[in-house]
Amino acid sequence: AAVSVLFTSVLDVGYWSYTTVVVLVTAPFEPVISDPESLELQWVPLEDVVLLELHPGFAKSWPDLRARMQELSAQRSQ
Image 1 (cartoon, one colour):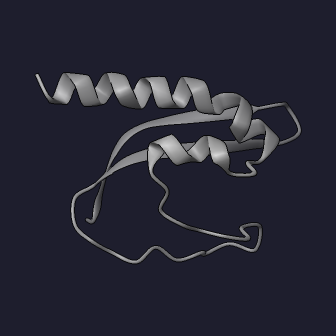
Image 2 (image 1 turned 120 degrees about the horizontal axis):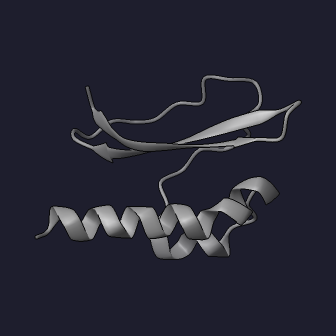
């Protein structure tokens, strides 16, 4: 596998939900859009995510997701 799942985060508002999957890339690959809901897919440095026009739900969850990623990164480097 080209990725290893680090954690998932689910936003569930009852009638609709989405899951964010955070992974560690273990081998280079070209990602592809495989569903009709996605408009764009790109690799973005963590510090640049806030500069993008994000889905409102994802934008709200981004600070917590980033904090979890930074925690994991710090743990891995110890």
